[in-house]
Length: 109
Image 1 (cartoon, rainbow, N blue to C red):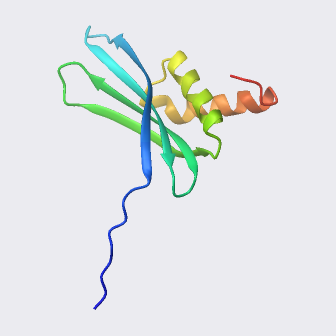
Image 2 (image 1 turned 30 degrees about the vertical axis):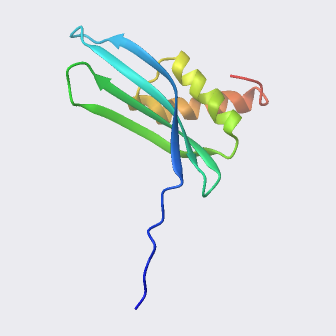
Image 3 (image 1 turned 90 degrees about the vertical axis):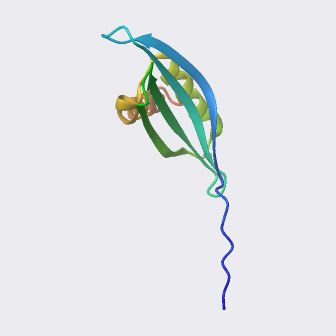
């Protein structure tokens, strides 16, 4: 008989900031930005959550593996907060920011 020990998740998320805005129906939306960490693989990612006022609807998107550099991913998260990116455009926005960073020879975003 073999026993399997359930492995605890080595993934964490750390809230880095929030944005609030009103939509076309004058309902408040709260967008939360997370730095995701997979400690097992030593890689960092990004998560964005959007919740509409008086609603159970939560939009969520994440990119699990962006870089092994926490500082690099934190710079991208700060830019996403600044540009008020929502879950719908997360992937395209991260791609654009990474290209911008490469073109600027690793200068800050």
